[in-house]
Amino acid sequence: MSIIREGFYFAGVALLIALFLGVLVHPYAAILPAVLACYCIYFFRNPDRKIPADENLIVSPADGTVQDVVEVDADDFIKSPCRKVIIFLSVFDVHVNRSPIAGEIKIQKYICGRFRPAYKDSVGFENERHLIGIENERLRVTVTQVAGILARRIVSWVTLDDKLEKGELYGLIRFGSCTELVMPANVEVLVKKGDKVRGGESIIGKIRDKG
Image 1: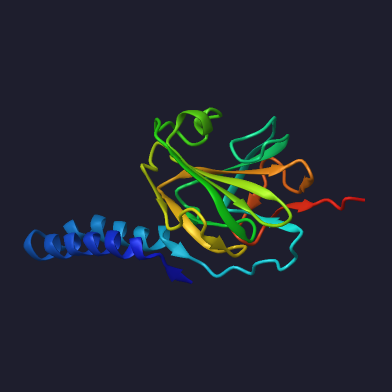
Image 2: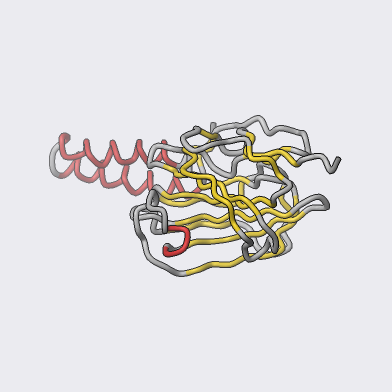
């Protein structure tokens, strides 16, 4: 278990406030910011994950609950019929995002928008979001980080032409949001609405044999 570097800033500020209030006001006044500091450490956690080695398997880009699996005619990167898996992240889930496949980033878009609750069906179209398209010699996938009513900040550590390993960290969303994974029709989706998934570890889909 490790902590994402952004977490040290938030936890550090909360601890300084707790120290200030505890010394200059009253020890009880330090309780709330101290609890907040503990939550920041918890929120920005980065647990170790066992990444499946099989190249046919697509892993979850995020922890959370599968909100829906829908058919899509096409998207900005996959120019053919595909399937989209929508994963809702509560404020208690791990919020780092991981690459679902090994590949190279061929498209990247940041779209400004609203900050509606992440469980609403329309947030993938209305809310602020960050999209990357990852490609390897076998397939293309699109991963979109979607902001929510509390998640006012999308963080990305990658850019165009960066190469990612399957399960590698590439960003996070603060604080409660959803992540969308779009896969081509030749991928068999192995999750359903209501399933709990773990980023980098849970298998979302499998490439079908051509035969």
